[in-house]
Amino acid sequence: MAHVSLPHDAKAGPTKPEVRAVLASKLALSPTDHFVEVGSCTGAVTIDAARRAGQVTALERKPERLEVTQKNLAANDTEAEVTLREAEAPEGLPDDADALFLGGSRNYEAVLDHAVETAVDRVVMNVSRLEVAGAATEAFRERDLLEEVLQFQVSHGYELAGATSFDSENPVYMLVGSASDEVAADSGSGVGAPGDGSEGDR
Image (cartoon, rainbow, N blue to C red; front, side, top):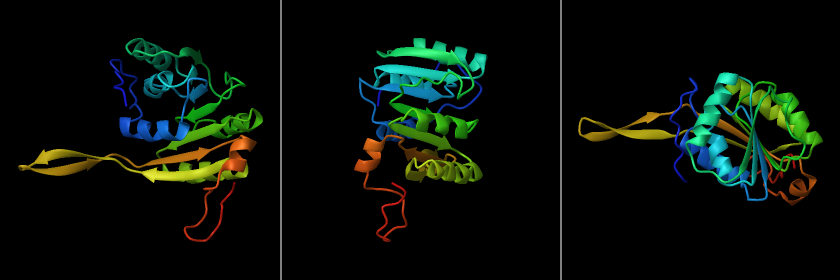
């Protein structure tokens, strides 16, 4: 994965590179895709997406964070057409998104409603708090969006007394789904109990 330079600080941690790598695999962006991000913050995900998708729209409700997104975007090489909007979702969301990423939980139910109404092909949401992850999973299920739930944690090695020990990051919960009937019909993975033969919600 190409390096993302973030010389400007948004006073909030960027989505970690390892998490962005998993996110990129789930979004599977192509040069014909319109990618939409809710909560751009440092712009780390925006930059990654702008190297894969043909068009990117990034929303950020805080003007100072949107300015950081803009500065960090300018510090990187990207090819996509990028539109930055100071807006609190679902306001400002376009109606032609192919892929949608929610980097936070603010107003997420209204954003998911918009995704359903506009038949967004790929919807991914990252959550760091267990209680929010549970509620968001139910919100995905209620809207017949849910295809997959992941929980993963990354640990980084460091030298300790001449050997290697590890510092672990906070766990990340990732919800993956689709509001596209075509994708739903093709999906065979679903979310069911292991070994129960269920195809889950889709």
